[in-house]
Image 1 (tube, rainbow over the protein chains, first blue to last red):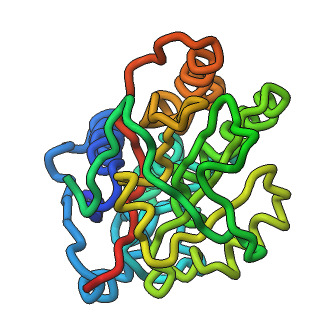
Image 2 (cartoon, rainbow over the protein chains, first blue to last red; image 1 turned 180 degrees about the vertical axis):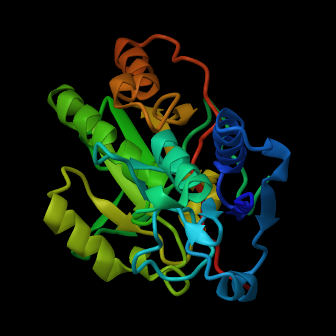
Length: 113
Length: 181
């Protein structure tokens, strides 16, 4: 039996992308048969909170505790997350396909990268 | 309202005099030969919105240079808490990317407060008399390069033609990183 993946969005008030990120993740959860309301949304309020959560920028999206893009060597801090899209562009949000791939990998562990 | 008070449309722009990444000072007014339009915009090195829009702004600067439009980029972020916005990092970026306009360091954040800069990027378009004619975002979506900073272009075209610029827009981006007091 496979347990449902734990999906969370961590956000900080200094970035305007939070609502779009939540909408994006919920849409992909729904598309894959997951319950969108199960998404955990957590605010990172201060630097201590960022340290505790190894938060490298808003929005941070994790599936079963795994960052969907990998934090790389980004320092912990209260900032906006820089996502590299698959076509090389910079964005404040990840590719939809990247969110979907992370969710699929959690639902079907054999597909985890 | 944030830490800053918004500059009023149609009013004279606040004064500006700041050093660039080589220490040379730039300001408004520029001297006896005033530009027909000036773009002052807040940006930084670490914000995805500023990074995503930067190429579009550079393109506009290149295309409007022959019409005498002047561009000044300003970074007001607290570099103690955000080292990616240190003057050294600013200088490295200007040299690596060969910026076509000065990148000014607002160390004490006075300019950001006086101009009412809220986020990066936040654009201010001035006419030849240095009155504020447009403030806001370059275009509607940092993720869509096809928009080509069209709001900025329309504002410049209007100012250069002596026409009424389009309505200002809500700037979208990362909040200015104010120093903690």
